[in-house]
Length: 265
Image (cartoon, rainbow, N blue to C red; front, side, top):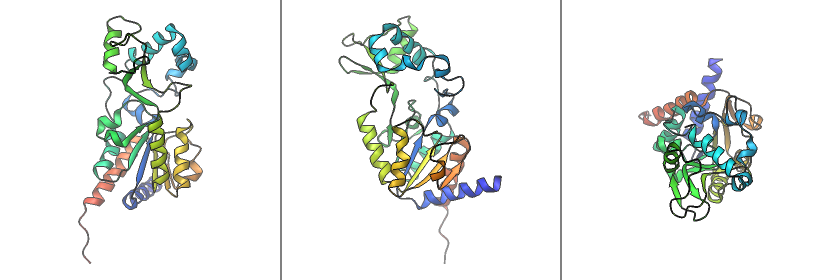
């Protein structure tokens, strides 16, 4: 019912206004609204390709696997010419309003930064497709470097410094999460007073432990997600709606309230 949704949105607005440290945690449900297919959803990569081809072991051992991964990740163009959506811009506006401690994201598309969030406030638990890394000399290159070589017909682009093996700077199956991002995410989750999940089913671990760290630290938990999550019963507010419209509506109300002149006694 609309009245029930309105009440929930108002509760979240009040929570944000009262919060000293709000952490926003985002998942694939945010990226899909920018046209990036969910890896696990209908029509996603896992419905068309074997997830075993995305293990670090196969990447290191098989030239054919590396060529396939470059075709899937870069050749299909999922991470090019994409723009932030209303959810990204709303979360960036939270930072502009000084109502955001940090963003913790499972997404690899760099859209939070593109929308305006500060890079040092975005912790990418699964890495970023913005960069590729040489496994031999550890040099970093922008993803456009690989994209151009693939466009020119090269199936497995080499490092231009040492001709070593390049790898997207994302976390493959069998790899540990980036240490700095994981430690920072755990620290901020444990120390926040409000934790807002946007567009995540909260099933991919260890990223999915973050709401637990927040609740154990005494934070309130808000979940905005179309599907069910394992934390639904622990949520202080649960909104089963799409990410963009709801997040945009909430943050606009926060901004309006903050800009409203104080009432005289």
